[in-house]
Image (cartoon, rainbow, N blue to C red; front, side, top):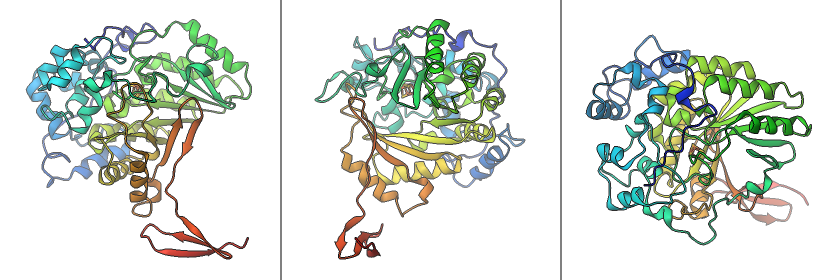
Length: 434
Ligand code: SF4
């Protein structure tokens, strides 16, 4: 089985965190959302959430798919539980039998679930599963969370640790590549596992020591290196830890005088938006300046629940950016990417990076030619708001860091003039004496 039982998460796994019931539930109601009947004013409903950042006085609309999925497979689960992030986490779908209950699996998918030795376990929250097509194995969201036999192929240039992070790890769980910033891995758990994950060598396997000792060593390393001004907290997904554990980590980092600001990377607003509770946001806002990198891939992830999650974070004063991975058959066309970045701006999330997919072992079916990424950037630049255009980067294999890749708009030179082309292909001169 590809799924394993390695997620006890003794350091702060959700199952042993605060008692359930503290999150403010989303309230679902009748009416149409963006996936059902377009006549109804979906934006009005969402806007109510976005403007307040609290559970809106008006009832929040869930998508048609989510409501239909709940009715079919979780008819007895009340809103109170469905909207409780701990319930969602405890009830993740992780086994072949659980997937077969809600999906019509292809032979390939069944084979992948039955093979031993997968790098990455399977885990999908019921909420995210509600967005996955029951029978279309090529549906973009389904491709990102349901294993495929192609994961077991080892292609040329692929590696388990393509970015060479292990070589830049002075103490366990801390990657120090750039002089002034570090990556602190606080957990190896996620609520849902992405089949293209760069850290699939370590996430979800339960092999990361969860004791305080490991974190104290990492904190001590940061304390002893005054050049470190920026700490990126990642994992796994740091929001897989409970509020108290996160508060503990953030408080200790904040006490280090030379740490100027903190960043956190999370996919929770997309896969488990119920995790973004008012209580969490109240805790996070104590630790400003705190920035967040969210991980959205496809416009279908931009549901009312995700809108509300992002609104709560933004209203807590947290600048939000999205790191999107370019994936074949998921978001590798201009139209899909344009719809995604437009949704993100409405969610107050700046499309920050578009990543070329890392050559992780078994990722060939996800990787696109670099030319595809350039085509997408060309299709956005000038054709939509500048804020909507992410930086397209390749994280250089072997630890070279992020390298920006851009279409070339400089056509050449004519004497003292630089020759430029604009987004429509028009030629322009700019005086640029040598
Ligand atoms: S949420 Fe991030 S760390 Fe977790 S599986 Fe997805 S890409 Fe990997």
